[in-house]
Amino acid sequence: MSIVVTGATGQLGRLTVEALLRRGVAASEIIATGRDTTRIKELADRGVLVRPADFADPESLAAAFAGAERLLLVSASFPVDERAANHRRAIDAALTAGVSLIAYTSMTRADSAHTVLAGTHRATEEYLREREAPAVALRNSWYLENYTAQLPSALQHGAFLGAAGDGRVSAASRADYAEAAAVVLTTEGHTGAVYELGGDQAFTLAELAATASAVTGASLGYTDLPGDMFAEALAGAGVPAELARILADADLGLSRGELFTDSGDLRRLIGRPTTTLAEALAAAAR
Image 1: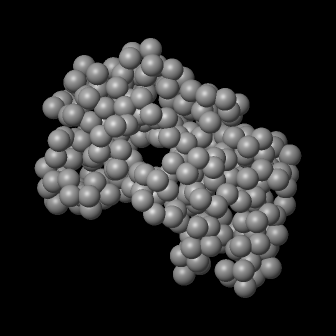
Image 2: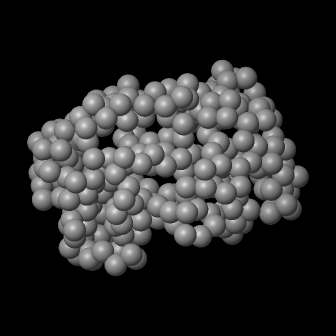
């Protein structure tokens, strides 16, 4: 079985390749793609097929997907206004190549959420249905790494910042999401499924601060801001303006429950409990 993983130069794609290898997929049956394949030379050295692919270049997609049976379509990054078109080109190329399953990394509650990111995922899911593609939606909630990456700043300033109010987020580790993707790509019965994926233990950002305090021994709080002020704070910390607006918008979605799921789908797919917030923070603190 030949499996293509897009975005293998990124963190989720790379982790999925590693998860496929652990599940016994031969390196020669994995096609890792990305725009800059020099970043995954180590995978090529291990026998993984490495091919260049650019979502904006249909010819590169056709060459990258040639001979593939299954595809993990890792959602494109920025700019956000080009995401849906990039995804459509990838879907068209996969169907032309005869791929029998497209696993798409979507977002929790993509069909009903009101964030900008959810809108791009909803458009992609709709296109998969329009093309009658054999597909499965992997609706990932937020990454725990989105919060562990904030730990140094929180320790410096004494608080986590956000615009999430009392909303609960079902964050899980990238490794957990990658393992779920590998399971879907290597087992049967997933075509047409929509998996709402998230960690077993949802938390508020105030609970994030409390857990980080317990793990590190520091006294950390959570400061809730209006969305526009949070975006300004992110931009002031060096986050690019567009990304700052997207992250603030996502926090507002979090406040509305749009990043929460209690489906248990992730735990069932990977066959074990998901990584906890405390575990992730402890690893980051080390």
